[in-house]
Amino acid sequence: MRPADGYAGVPRWVAAVAVVGALFVLLPLAAMVTRVNWGQFVPLVTSEASVAALLLSLRTSLAATVLCIVFGVPMALVLARSAFRGQKILRSLVLLPLVLPPVVGGIALLYTFGRRGLIGQPLEAFGVSIAFSTTAVVLAQTFVALPFLVLSLEGALRTVGTRYEAVGATLGARPTTVLRRITLPLVLPALVSGSVLSFARALGEFGATLTFAGSLQGTTRTLPLEIYLQRETSPDTAVALSLVLVVVAVVVVSIAHQAGSTKYLRGAL
Amino acid sequence: MTFSFSAAVAERGFEVALSVAPGETVAILGPNGAGKSTLLGLTAGLLRADSGRAVLDDTVLFDSVGGSFTPPHRRGVSLLAQEPLLFPHLSALENVAFGPRSAGVPRAAARATARHWLAEVEALDLADRRPAQLSGGQAQRVAVARALASDPKLLLLDEPMAALDVSVAPALRRMLRRVLAGRTVLIVTHDILDAFTLADRVVVLDGGRIVDQGPTREVLERPRSAFTAGLAALNLLVGVRSQRGIRLADGSEISGASDLVVGASAAAAVRPSAVRVSLDEPAAANRLRGEVLDLEPRGDLVRVRSDRLAADLAPALVADLDLAPGAAVWFAFDESDVSVYAG
Image 1: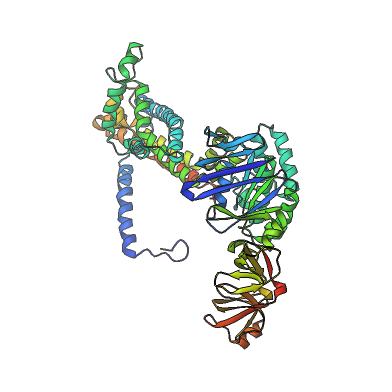
Image 2 (image 1 turned 90 degrees about the horizontal axis):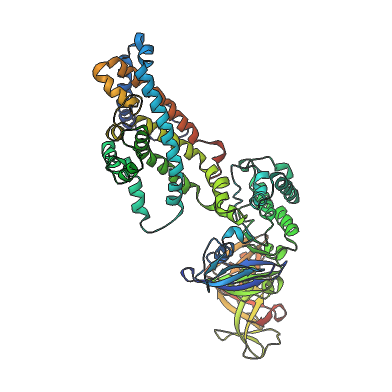
């Protein structure tokens, strides 16, 4: 192995353990690829159920990502830029879905937006029913994906600091102008990579969706749910669709990686 | 553009009152932690005072009685820091146009204003560059243009030359001298040259209080605080006016002419170049005993420092006297080299 540049003090045994770790991640993927029925691959992933699940997944994940941006950006700003009593506790609570089992999240959502839920019941009176609908899928995905965006954006906001914003204010810019023309452009790479991560998390959502939204083909049965169901009846379809999700995930991760290294920020911070 | 300011911040031990006349440039001098940055932060609206009041023209910046506080963007106070802090995602031109744009000026007009100010600071050729492509001196020029383009009623400069190479500072200082003429400016600096070339008046802060202030030349030639004396490279001796001159705290007396009344508190300033050093007690009337603390080369002279006095000597003389830290010596100077004034 050649060190990246200059001295790199990585002991050989550390590298060996790292290789084992990497294999642990890559080997299952390779094992899955060996099981793909290539002859039937195209028909399998283009079947009516598969296409419906894929399109539903993409649509709901995009909607969830938009919701994450709409609510996550203000949340990250408040957490990073203001100080108030109980802020630390609020921060931990907001990030809770990150460590919560998704099934638990689904149950919590059910008791909030479900037919007999805290908000669901009054909404029902207006004829609005959320549980077991596509809206429920989007809500479940937003619930689990929101912390990813908040976390990465808050970190970036703290790193960038408030000095540019202070300069902007003394130049006569209103807080909204400062936000639009200084703060957001400065954290744009983190906003993009955070959004991509949220999208990826939403795309992979399973537990909360199944609990809160159920599994109706074309309405709430997203790709992960379809894969889980097909595993029983048609393992070949499950493997083929899994490969599709792996490819989408790889693309997403590389986009997030690219966005994380934006030229103009180098040397400026 | 009259600026009057009076504020206290208990946490920082800061209590300062000052005012700046229209078109006046005031230099704020003082050691680190003296409260210079606090003064600028309070004026720009980036910090809040515990008590006090500041008014710029008809705008009340803050007033603890009644609790009014004008946010930074409505103060007409622009702050230029040590580092240029150009917005990294905007070109030099867009950086300078930021202020006018924020004030609601249409894009084309804002760019025209930006070009005008870039030309003023001799940086028009840098208009299309990104901040990352600018050297420190170029970036600071653009930052000056940006601060001026927002048309501030009061301009705050926080050690604008401190982060620059010694080789580019003189050109920037000349440029500042030109563009600051006729403006109301507060400039924080460590550099006596800035005070002399840019300021009409200096205010010396120490420990959050004003310890010395007045017209630049007067303050620096007749310092009242040890910090100012050090800055002006003068020896400062403080005591009370006596028959012959000034009596110091330890009872020794220095001769020097002054029209102060006997008994008044007084200060005496002596240039290090006028101080002589000898091993034997000299015949001169003005002599003080001292122990050498350190020796520091300064150009073609060596500065010999004791706890009270410093003397600039030729290196050969330092060698002849075999001076080293700890050596007991006599310092002497002529009466005509002493300036005695009110302390």
